[in-house]
Length: 353
Image (cartoon, rainbow, N blue to C red; front, side, top):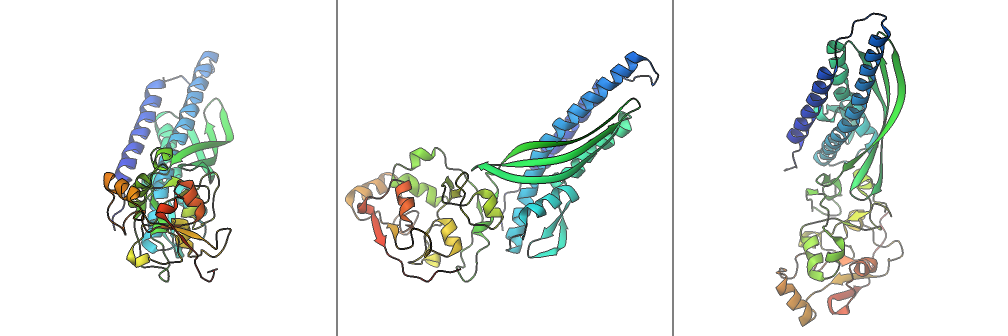
């Protein structure tokens, strides 16, 4: 199974980040005699204040790197084990703080996380350097990591941490909170792989890809077809967010919902099943406000759409958006309710709870 390998890139960036702060601190510190001279005390306190500022900047930068690495690792573990975590957020926090990740489906067993994902360990690197080279004793302890989302393509990582710095002249002790944004494009979507066997044998390793200029592709069937063929995601408030997806929760998110269209293949064809991914994975189309009607795209009902198909090099029927079954709200969303390429369906089924 092929996955996007970010380990080498992330590790290189992390190494450069650590090297940068070490060089900055090393050449910024001058040896100050440990006496009671007020000038020396002032200089030393200024140096330690600069150290604290540099450490806080480093923690924010390394939070982004470690979160991305931990997300990539945790998601791929779910894909490997074909199971979601009972509590994804807690599992990710354990990876970043303790350096181990529970095994999905067997959470009593743990696996070591990549070094780049270990936020606490990466923060400790700076403390070790300061103790050895700057005669500063510092301890940073990550207390809590929280994931939230307010936009479709990024998550917010909130880290609460305690920092204590001791020097010959003073002690600094504080509890702080930082917020860092992490882009989710390029990470794998576990919903395409963790599929109930009773639903379908269809599995696909699909990475989150953001549609470019969503307003343009809504204008014609051919551009929407391109989105379908390439399994690209688009903002859609009726769909689940990235965080809901990795948590195994298909509830919608009005602020951050994203969706893709599962291509209509023979192996997953079902006259009662929508091709919108979050509905397809739930295997339940008989609940909600659209329970009595679906639309199926049929671009071969008029000469106009045939010309459009040929001019945009859309393959023959059975590929891409053609044949996809969607709720009326989606057809309206992509501005494709013209009966010249829409079949109206009335599905009959029993809700699956």
